Image 1 (cartoon, one colour):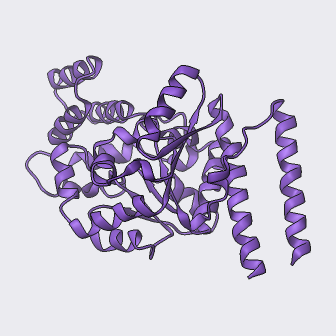
Image 2 (cartoon, rainbow, N blue to C red):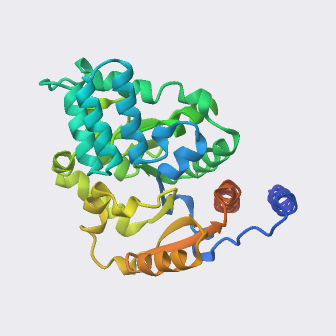
Image 3 (cartoon, rainbow, N blue to C red):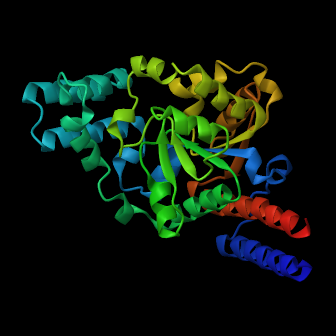
Length: 331
């Protein structure tokens, strides 16, 4: 067994050297307090930065504004809005009005006077926006998903603020079935928080394949948070595990995320979470790092370019998962 471990170590070291040579630059070192974590100690938080890297030609994956614009375009394509209504929505978008309220008004327009989302045009617009994601995934993005899946299979939990199911699609092609959960299925979410559903992805805003579970309006957040047992179990994860934020530039400002974690959890500076970001502007990076420390989040640079993230995350996943295998081998 020791010889197998040695071979794996040699392969990994060689791969790291090749990465450094092919990129022409030395890769960022892995932070000791992160790379020594065990996979079951981690909760990976997947943000829009990951989805936009996986399928960059899909505007709805890049930002909240991109999603609303894509829904508006779909509504226009299906002739669901009067010209005056369409102009009004477009004007709000250009003026950067409160996008949550713009989204709510648009969805209300597409879902007139019915509680059954399946019978509304909103579902059709959602499916149009996220149509054929499988064919739009790029190679570098698949590298990111491979590392996330590797950590999941070693015991890490995953939650996302994204509406897409790119990770689930990728996993299915690798022979692993992942279940998509949203906060409306309280029993399954409770089991997820209790680590009984590790191969499930919790979509805290919902997932497009279940329009009934999508949360877009402030009033909807109150419904999401009504089950105190479920929320408390999820909050325990934030207090007892290390969250790793991937592609999450604005996640800590998200209304749902704040209600679930930041507002409810005391003594945040005693926690140890991690946020992987690009170090482009030195001043902004330092400011973010200092601000996040008060929230118990260590901001780590994976490199100067977005293209540095897949290689960094791959090395991190290999390091953590290799240790899991070694520990199990040696008993």
